[in-house]
Length: 418
Image (spheres, helix red, strand yellow):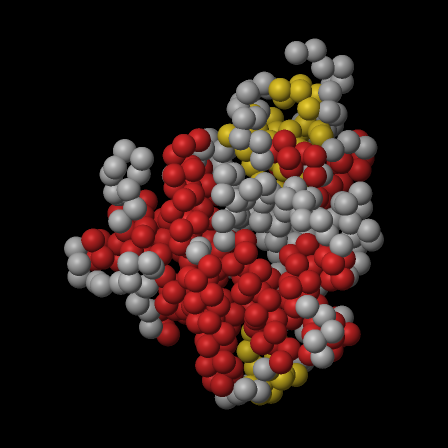
């Protein structure tokens, strides 16, 4: 291999502090400086090659070129994903485990989840009429957490749902956190893994009966390619990988409520059936920050864009920057749901939950679940809930990963409209 170009190198000896300072804009800023979709840097002492754009995403999701093995730092595994979870796997083992998740996300089952979620929105909205004020992010997390548990077959009480939702959101919040934020996520995972391990054990011992098509049953009795059941702790981790992403939709709902407030014409258009809520949901996922970047390692040496990529090199794919790439999106800094009327469905240029084919690669298998629940939840906010929005701080920092409006969207004088 004889590449003609050297990958642009970040001048800073180690960019860890700059990453923490710049957050979501760390990779886009340097792509702009070096006028390149590729540059190298050092994060926590390790060499990292950062890539951005649709073509880079296509490379990142090429299973012959990239591997997830040993790509995820332990601190991320111990908070966000879980140790030895599906996100750390590759090859046949990953494909086999992925089939489990895809079977859980069947059309009929997802439609059931949507019905459960709608019912819980209505039930909680009636309770909210008695509140002086409420924080939408917190309440949405409880709704989605409870819906995920009911749908998965996990017995849960209201008080338990509140605690579980708090722990699940702490896992997500720990992604870019240090100090207290990180340890909240770490402890939340320890507590939740213990609970899920107990539940898995009860199902296997027939002390808890659940539907055979439920997520809990399928994960409890899933067998690896070698014909063995997952150990109870790993099975519990994969069960959390159902609950956590559904609960995390509360972030999108919070940004969705913010968009309805800041762009009221779209609220009116949705109410009058002049805008498909699907378009609004997609633009929320593109416009607002969620995941900043994803990691993998080079599986085999290759040349891309005349640059040499060496086996074992850690790669960061720029999620936020790709979703705001002006080569892909016209006026990417504008909130414009109608743009998705013209989107061609390219699996690599719109990647809020990863790219490529979810059935064969590492794209999130529950992405369409997110879209469906986000769409129906936005419809509920528009058509079945009225509320006042007191003065508050709606700003969110792109330095913080993940981020959320500072107020987490406070509402009051809530009224439910059946």
